[in-house]
Length: 249
Ligand SMILES: [Fe+2]
Image (cartoon, rainbow, N blue to C red; front, side, top):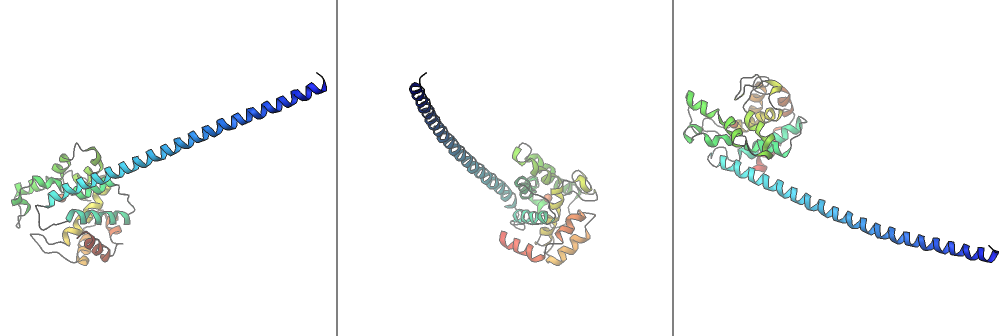
């Protein structure tokens, strides 16, 4: 190869390398644009999925509230009890460092759904219940968990519904569970439920003030209630509960 043909060959090589590089750059740019499209598509899909999930959660909550309101519509005394007690339960769980997912909150709202099976004459009886009436009344947690049996999205809610009348010392119902065998959210709920029951007028007695309710709940720590949950409740001032009640009303 002469020096001139070598120079020509060298130029060809450089030109072809440049051409190849330019082609590779074009291909890379096309691929980058494709990837950007894919990323944009994925973002859009995620956004739509998130919106759908939020919409679903809203629908679930609306359905649960409709069910809870259907139970409460019978009882003029307890108006909005489920929403108040759910809000108290969330506050107490927060103070105790216990996470509450939406399913559990649904359990708080639906805790007394089994009362749909209790006749008005028993539910609103001002005097003491006969043994049979008491048996029917105390069946409401079991009936409630049966009502929810086939609703998969309420799986965690069912333990609250079934076990919200268990006692720390094992004397509650329906399963007679004691101490930590009682699902923790049911233990939290029991305190919230008592707080609302005590501070609301009932057919058989008038409401007491926040301070008196607190005394009553403290006295039942270790017998009816989990002492650790009562201690967590005790860190929350009365006016926090008063504000929650006003917010729900
Ligand atoms: Fe109940």
